[in-house]
Image 1 (cartoon, one colour):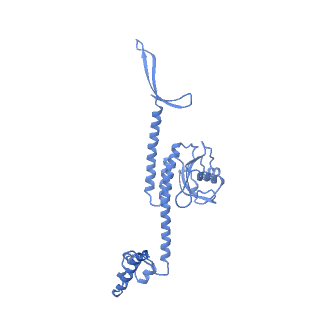
Image 2 (cartoon, rainbow, N blue to C red):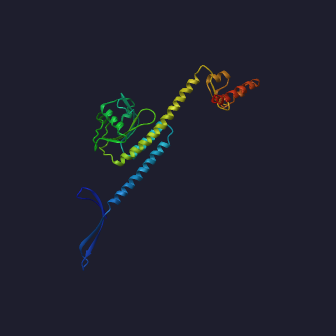
Image 3 (cartoon, helix red, strand yellow):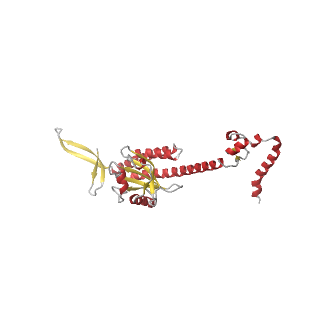
Length: 302
């Protein structure tokens, strides 16, 4: 039989014991002999093993959510869906920027239980108030996860807590390689909650994975937006523009060039320029091509 016991030093111990009855000649129990042993270390080891197993399983869920997404918003959607279930909390959110000097902040994405809608439902920039600014200052000064509210010496951001009805907050600042910091957090609204060390460790690891994913997807999104702007600029240019690879196959042609040549962009893409030349122009084109290919090598010998 196992049971817990509090010793004189207020330490919780786990004991295991068996009871051996002693009988008289008539078969009546005349005494009980209890034999016990301290199994506190065994219990602690088992608890740590369960926590570690749960940690690995939860991180696998988060990793799958990240790996299954191919754009920023779908990745954040999937991760916050997992976070709100893993922590059994009432709200998970990501806001931008995590900058106490900013005039306002906005929830970029949020997951909540239906009975606890958050700031994300407003879909607007929210003016920075002293409580949120103080919270973000602490997050930026501290490299890890911070708990706010019950069981801590850090108060909740009072105005936000009252407006959005949360009683406990666990949060951290994310620092992707592109742009400003983000604030990642979870709320408990239904009751006051004291976050455990295991909660904080798991939240920290999820935050690190989200930071890596944010960095990659923000860079990719920025590259795609830059490429799209570049393509639009070229496409509306008044001059005809045609791009070729090293084999002189057309890889890009803007609308104006296609119109000049009398073909569609699709008809020109992937084709050799010589496909559209008169035979008498071939020698001159080949001479120009040889000169272009020789130029980098000649320039490097200077």
